[in-house]
Length: 284
Ligand SMILES: NC(=O)c1ccc[n+]([C@@H]2O[C@H](COP(=O)([O-])OP(=O)(O)OC[C@H]3O[C@@H](n4cnc5c(N)ncnc54)[C@H](OP(=O)(O)O)[C@@H]3O)[C@@H](O)[C@H]2O)c1
Image (cartoon, rainbow, N blue to C red; front, side):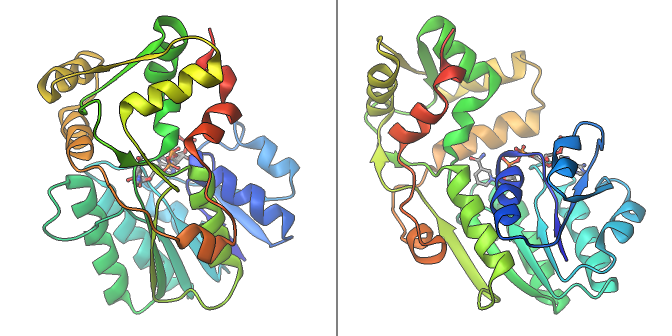
């Protein structure tokens, strides 16, 4: 039995989709069983649970051999994920696949990466078999309500990045493809997989790709980090999140790995393809 956490999110929902095709017995931990009822229709066992309530994790982990651990970044993420690891050990889980972040290390300037590193260390010391999945910046960040709406309604997007600075982004579906392999095949224990997309693109080039796909001009506005942070705070985001997002933009990744091809045995999704697959989200 495999347990999937984060089952309704960008990555978890896609992992489930892929494993359903493999007929792998699966259980999904969800906060709202009603809202996740489509998963049940696919034959997946649903268990109500929340990381805030460790007692719900015990029940979710009973009889599980492999678990996919994903929790959104937050100041309580380390504590909650470590509690999950403890519960997994007590339940005799054999292998944890943890969704981490590229560059997870003690001295990474990004808080999010340092949090992931702390959890990785805890898992290493737990004695459980592990696989760490370290993706870079997601293409799906463009699907965030504010960004997608701005593209659809104002034909522009804003980020605190220099217009010609080229960086890489990965599609969450490719992350899911690698996760699905590590959960359903032997041989991935002890591995750390750094996942990227296939190309480096500047924000100017991203805007051009949007323009081509949508058939009208999409522009890009470069903001100072302080202005961008001010906008996030004004939109009600907490301080830690606004700061974390700025750190993310200040440390974007500028390399390409072959992990998606190597592990998932597929070509990584291009940004152009990502836009085409989500065209409606960017149309008014
Ligand atoms: N975005 C990036 O560019 C980027 C880059 C590198 C790494 N990462 C890492 O990727 C992860 C996020 O992945 P994602 O985009 O797939 O996440 P996501 O789409 O935001 O989904 C989060 C999932 O976690 C569930 N969840 C949230 N809080 C929970 C709780 N307290 N108890 C139980 N379930 C809970 C949500 O369930 P509900 O449906 O109930 O809300 C949802 O299924 C984070 O760890 C982040 O650090 C992100």
